[in-house]
Image (cartoon, rainbow, N blue to C red; front, side, top):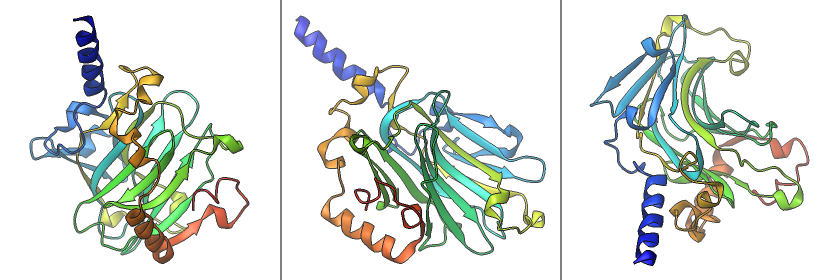
Length: 277
């Protein structure tokens, strides 16, 4: 009897840890997320399963998960602002809050008719690991899915199931790896650093980004302890997520050969770069 109760308790804990899974598109925004700023610049559609955040000259807007997460497979469907978006940055990312600064970024840098996908990984307060990509589709015409896999072995960024970036756990050679509980965020804001000296075309405002998919597949750190977040019973920690499979590897190499615009590894010698190829 005691053993049966223990098994049930473990099962229940693991279910709670990643409740409201990302595959469930009918989960309303308020189930897992809250507005961080710019509440008057946020609109809700389809029974709150779609949210539009916007930016004008007065303010931007953004949202974040209600709690922090350990490892997981985090995803969001996003339709980016159209028109002339020079200097406008739309984001989906993980960030430690509070504590030592860890962060895993998708940042979409606007342009006049095109976007640059800017990615970065911060560990122990240090960034400088930028990789940038051209997109092979129009991200303003429809929703596309962006994913962050984060487990103790690797971080993988995906665009519509295609892996575009890998960051391995190389702590064995002295490279820091994100380890802090992190919040999921989505924001839109003005970034002068991304405008290449050009002014924002405010006549195109308001700039509007739409988000869907508010389920979260992640280890809730308010419920689980650190050891539970490493459990192999959580699917994103399974062996199949320790490295890319052959089909993913082929797609990864193809997209990087065609669409990688900038790689921090080409500028400096970083010990992790060889294993992240």
